[in-house]
Length: 270
Image (tube, rainbow, N blue to C red; front, top):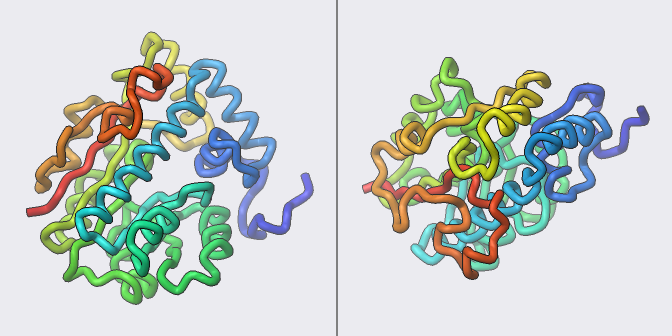
């Protein structure tokens, strides 16, 4: 397999990547055949995966616009993935010129492509780090350059926590990040769940098994388990809901049934 110019030499292009599979679901071009093959296997069990990813991105954009409308001008996007149309910095800076954005990811392709996209943007940066190590993120040069932790921050954990196993203490990581944020900060979160998927759990479980097989387990948590991530936050209306139901721009009855898979919410620190 020929290595494209955008693929860092350090990555093994024979192993599927969650970030590149996500890019494929969204119609992006920064993925390899190994990623497409794994994504297609998952879609054999859950054909609506691209619709779920589109609903996820649409929620993210609405939540960023909401944060900007509340006066938030700083955005920390952990698990940001490979940039595609309608990125956080594009939405935030359109709503609030001068808004500052830091992307965080541990996938080398996501980091390299983000750096290329942001090369001429002084108000945005990228950090190679892992959600499971919050202090590495908070003490990184880019966060220290762009984010004033004494002022409100919108913390985005969009489609990332379901890739953190309980043994890695995702609740502790989210709490540690919350403790670093100023009052008035927002948590923007989406999470996969069997609840809402228009399929029997055993069939949806086939897609989960594909992620298990590529050593990136997909943890399907219940609504109650997902709500625990918002401890210490006051929920913004309408609370923790299916992605299309969070402050929709259009009638939700027009949405694909798969878009209602999983949950989304925004919380505010007191």
